[in-house]
Image (cartoon, rainbow, N blue to C red; front, side, top):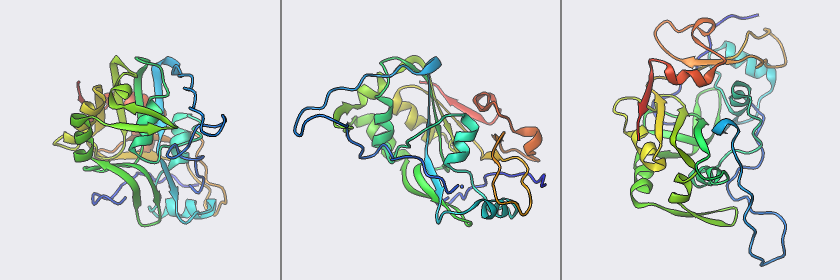
Length: 269
């Protein structure tokens, strides 16, 4: 068994795992059923349990790897967390991941007005970019789709219209899904690095209090069997990196509580 500390140290350059892929991404997924040419019926809006919605970005190993290879990458310090790690940490059984910003916004519109009190996004990020979809290899994590402060701020100030599952929406439709006291929490590295203009842009986009972290997020899988063939994720924990960070001491299963970490930054609406 191995008791090494495992942290997700992503590149500050903007590129940044598991071979398992979430289901079809939200992007481009149309409404099912109905006659050809018929106007699609509006879907029934959902009520989030306890007012919380958690969205998991799709990051997978490319090329796909087996369990033995993933264990070795972990032991060699070349491992990165991905979609299946987000599932293990959060307990969210997500079948889909948004493929781009439009799909992310569209996923929010699936909920009733004023129903979202907390929106969580698990992803990879750096000081300038928030990833929405990407992949990993032994060298790094890479964004195949991401957004930066300029794009987010542009949408926040000018507004936007978009089509999602054959329904037309505006930014006001997205904003209306948030309760007055809602928070948006971004679980990704360096999003709140000073200056916090990236967080501010998201706050302006959603008109909701936004929280991120000044440092890197650390994902801590349990000990692995050296020479084993199956990567063990059960009980995986996470934390926010600090000097002398230790997975067994400074990480937690209670990921929601990390917004109270000294490293967390809150930009109020």
